[in-house]
Amino acid sequence: MVKAVRIYKTGGVELLKYENITLDKPKADEILIKQTACGLNFIDIYHRIGLYPIDLPSVLGTEAAGIVEAIGDNITDFKVGDHVAYASGPIGAYCDYRIIESRYLVKLPGNISDEQAAAMMLQGMTAEYLIKRCYKVKSGDVVLLHAAAGGVGSITRQWLKQIGATVIATVGSEEKAEIAKSNGCDHIILYNHEDIAAKVKEFTDGSGVSVVYDSIGKATFEASLNSLKSRGMMVSFGNASGAVDAFSPAILAQKGSLFLTRPSLKDYIATADNLKSSANALFDAVSNGIKVNIGQRYALEDIAAAHTALEARQTIGSTIVIP
Image (cartoon, rainbow, N blue to C red; front, side, top):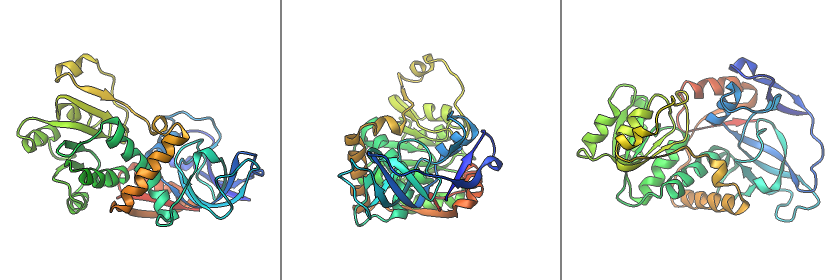
């Protein structure tokens, strides 16, 4: 029997059920993976609480890595024994064995471990599209990056420094501030205690930043807009503090003809070519020095504790779950 974590209705962590499920043999375009590590991401919480609706009952999880155990008849680009990872496709990663269509998988290079991949695929490809395609950051750009000590933030801040950007980072504690400083952030703001926009204006001599990457949501949205220079770009890509309240688009004009986007990774890796390109860019960045910080490991049966820590923003770097 396969062990998995499933929910039957949305709500708190007490609804996460660690139980047995059954799997069929892989179909022609599918692959059976023995999963060695699963990623933990805020989207998993959004699915659990119902912010992003899903069909129920459902196994949760969007990201994992492991070893190919069996392949369907049409599979030619993977073989048994390959190490693979995914961060897209149907949810259902919280399990020890999984069948998934091959089009969602990427083969791991020899220098990337399964645990690294599970810790970085979703977060790293998110960083890639944010800074390479959503708003193409250039050397010399000044960037405001929220939650810089988290999983996405950790990879993004390192990548921004590779590009040559000036990084203003927000974090939630002194401990996380030290981590951000040690990883090359130019300026640090404690977003729970300091006026974000005022500090940004101080650091930029009153001009503001070219782009804001905001995964916090409701608690920082207005401050993010107020931190932008004229015609700057606001990238809102998460809701860690809750969904942003409704507002009039006219406010963007009032604050300097600002741009606002609410992107999703799935739209940036929607094709096989996009997926491979994004993954390869991430693998190259890691090969060039970006470090994947695995701050926490949990057993799959302890998934409720993992969700609780992530939801309370008590984690540092990436968290992986071991089946």
